Length: 86
Image (cartoon, rainbow, N blue to C red; front, side, top):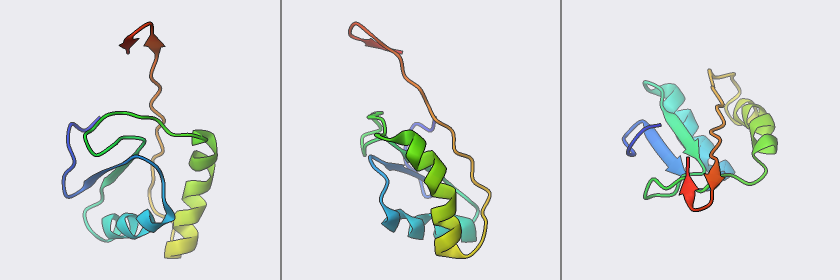
């Protein structure tokens, strides 16, 4: 995972449809990465209903932009054991 936000890397704690504008900007530039479930400090906080988001996001992008973009949806799973996160 990327260690910090940059001009082509965005961390978002939750998905909002208003982020489609940023995805459109990435598609028109050199590309980029959106990480959903990471706060502004880079802490992984997870995503509620991640399966639903993974299923709906490609069609949201297609419907908003009128094109199909190259998108890779990669869930990151975290294991918590006692007080340790792995």
